[in-house]
Length: 366
Image 1: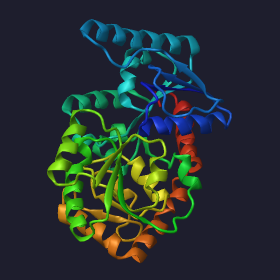
Image 2 (image 1 turned 135 degrees about the vertical axis):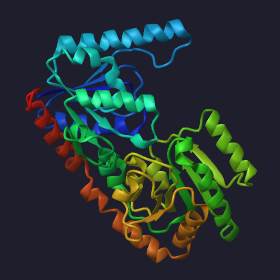
Image 3 (image 1 turned 60 degrees about the vertical axis):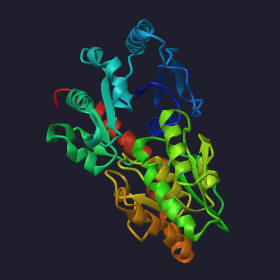
Image 4 (image 1 turned 90 degrees about the vertical axis):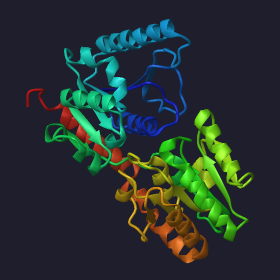
């Protein structure tokens, strides 16, 4: 079986991490695996058994002419490679990368698989329209959650399978047991409106009125206009020195593993990798019960706490509960670690492999 994973880049992100561990698993189980990256940007390490091909097309553009040239090169170089190498299947983990091959694919011999990694309910109408067209035409779709699959028609859903992300960060498998939790609360995720850090900031501001020794550490890209807005809001709430923006760190989960708790305050998610890693690390976790993923991972008050989206008081109460009831917190953390078994790389990669084989072995007119 020759499979090519087509990605825009290999920067830090959930889709890229999935491609990293899945390509390694398949290559080590006898598959011919190529990782075709349009740009040269690489964050994750790639298994030496995986053929890494980079097309060296830059991500950014300084003007309209350069943007056109880059777009042409993405289209031309990608299709030229696929025509010359003839894989059995191309997997576009992110649907947007399929736009470079979509027209040629319809005249090709290879199968096309993609995945729905976001919450389609919250996407722009033009993106929804593109995905509907792509999903109807492609051969297979991986959905991260049951709710995401149910958004689409039976015609599309019948081509798909729900596969949760694996806990793909190998660091969590070797973390030692925490003997003493530090007076800090951690969050991991890009500084974007979707993550609703403002609600977290307000809840944390109330928490430290009771426990002033605590700090909030946030791991994620801290550059850009919205990041500056968040930093200003933190200052306006009197949280200078109490909220620490750590930036992107490869070992974020290691640094966060001895926190009192982990918080995800998102308005919506797909299947949140950062939350899964926090659970795997044995952290007492709090998440908003946002669509789609958290409720498929957390059983409230058993392996974590779920709170309503945007509810400052509920989020404050959940953090205080963990601080004030360490036995309950540790029990939630202990139960959360079961995700290492249910969502291991081997378990989830095997599910992917079975689905890919089924798609490749199904005739296009079946």
